[in-house]
Image 1 (cartoon, rainbow, N blue to C red):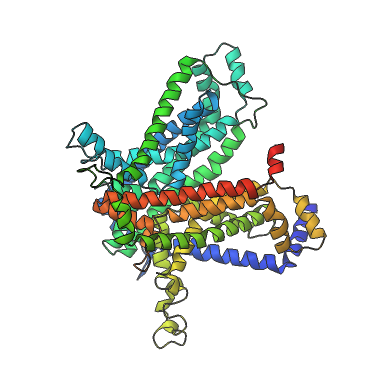
Image 2 (image 1 turned 60 degrees about the vertical axis):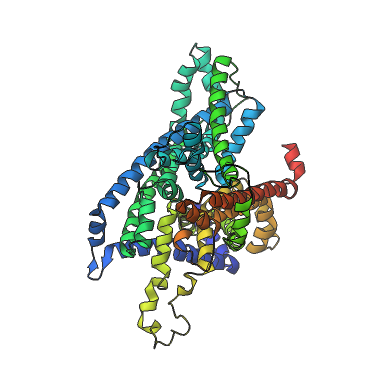
Length: 588
């Protein structure tokens, strides 16, 4: 009875607040139109033909040897990358949490964990080709090997494992820190060796987290477009096959069906990871440690583990350093001296680099505050408000995390190229229709090929990350703080802007910069949507890498890394002086 009365009172308060009602309506409309609708159109294109419901398109694509081979290739790469990334991430996390190590190794770990965030997704592919390709610095000039090929299955696996293992490292580091050390110390006191403690105590507690890390990496791997495109060679994956089907074969219906297959795989894995393993992890770990953990100091353990992780971290950093170094050589693979800045000059004088950086910077700069504000609003509604559409808003905003960029790009092509619901084909939108002058391309058809659709894709792709951060921050704020503002007569907009947002400004600023970095380094969705009117940095890098112009691709990538790394450093500086009160930080 009391629960129903409370729900009725919450609904009454909500309906009495027109700003909140309008916000919810706008959010539901945005999420429906720009996330659910493109995916629904893919299903319609795949299952509905001229004669109604049909599986003909699926039969056709499954009869293509190239498509069935791409599915097998994708699953093989995904499973192996997931296993390798999880194991290497576990090694790094265990060493940092359990082993006493020097400042140099700790600094290397921090750099390695940050590099995948601030760099384009295909930087390691460029480095791998330049170091180990047929004209590679190591293979050809140091080892004298001429008949090797870094392209294909192993090239993709190595590059993706190096790219994604820092994600597993960050996830598993948090889980290991939350294991109560008294459980392991009790086993040690009973005479168990360190390996026995790890296998019988630590590992069982960590198993759900390992499964979670594996699935996250698996999803990232099968959804990855840029690395297989550059280093895959003739080894096709689902993401590259979809791209080639729509750009090479001009088969939009076939590409839509392929996208549905890839989406189905990622959604199943995302569902297992989100609704089973995350809950299992929370129930298995024991919470915050009761006291500090006694770090391992035995040299028989610390030396080999630290050396192994240090070498791996150093190798990854060297791979990233290969990109700016590669931009300084006259001709990579043939002439390495004298060093030159001509490729950086040609970026701006010959290859329209200024326009590429301007377009990418401006579009990302527009998308990032929109993303950050939307993320905070969604987080606020999910955590602080009760209404019927709350579950819908949370689920759909997080859905974009499970949708590969290539799938989203195909969905936007099919959903908006002919207007909303293909409205350009309706009679009222025909040449003689009354509304044709107002909507010549159908409802919302005008955004296709414009800057607006690129900005929307940036927002949708970054929304889940900002929303998760905002939800975590808002759950730490006591509800009574906001209720006191309501009691003094403030409306929901005033409370959100003057009370809630200042309390979560660290999360807001972090979401702002994360959205900017993710937008300016994105490629998988926008490569299908960008038109010659706009030049984007990542598309340019991909284009030059495919042509074998690695030096100019490295020059573009180097400038992009400087921009993104500078943005992260600027965010840290702003948060230090304008984020959470410095006095509060000193008191913690």
